[in-house]
Image (cartoon, rainbow, N blue to C red; front, side, top):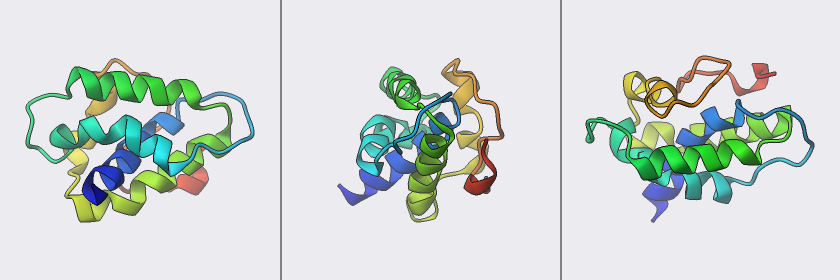
Length: 116
């Protein structure tokens, strides 16, 4: 359960970057719930992101209303990335594989505070 929660947080951080305008930050529980299905691909155990992964990330992207939302999602995802075995090379492929536009590099090394 804890593993799924952390994985969701990490994968949804890139969706935070997709948002436009708003003020309230997206909670980590929302990030986790929407990104959990991406864990298999992000750890290199699945050949491609599942439909559930892409749909969850699209849903998460729709919740983003502000830069603060993007930063909050990023922070949530980074918390569990290292302990979950997320591989940067797979993580960075998710936006293109899911046909989701992201305006920044998707990486475990992204500095969440520089997102705009």
